[in-house]
Length: 178
Image (cartoon, rainbow, N blue to C red; front, side, top):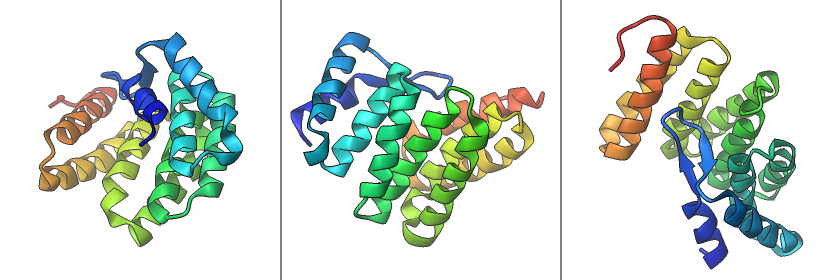
C-alpha cells in the first residue's frame, strides 16, 4: 500500500450511522487530489480508495466518475466487488437510490458467484441502502443474514457494525433494537 493510500484510509472513518466521513477534510482533499493527478498510472486499488475519499468528502459526482473507472479497471472479481459497493455508496449517500440499487445488486451477484468471502460486505452495504430506501423490513432480513455470517467469521468489529445497522433497521420498523 502506498503511503498516500495508507493516509487516505486513515482519514476516512465510519460513523454510527454507517456512513463514511473525513476525519480531516482538508488533508484528505489534498491527498485525494494528489492521487488523482496520477490517475492514468494509478493502480486500481488506489483509484478506488481515492473514490472512497471523495465519498467521505461529499463530492459524490466526482466519486461516481472515479469509482466507475475503478470498476472498469478491476483486474479481479474482488476488486470489482469492492469498487461496485463503493460506487453504490457514491449514489446512495446523496439520495440517488434508484441508481444505487442495481449497482449493489451487481456487486451481490458477483460476490455470490465469484468471491463468496465478500458476500457479507456486499449485503451489509445493501442493507444500509434498504434502510435509506425506506424498505426497513427487507433491511432487517438482509442484515440478519449478514450478522449470522459475521458471527461465524468471529470478527468483533464486523459484528458490531452489523448490529448497529440492524438496530437502525429495526428502529425504522418499530422493533426492539439489539
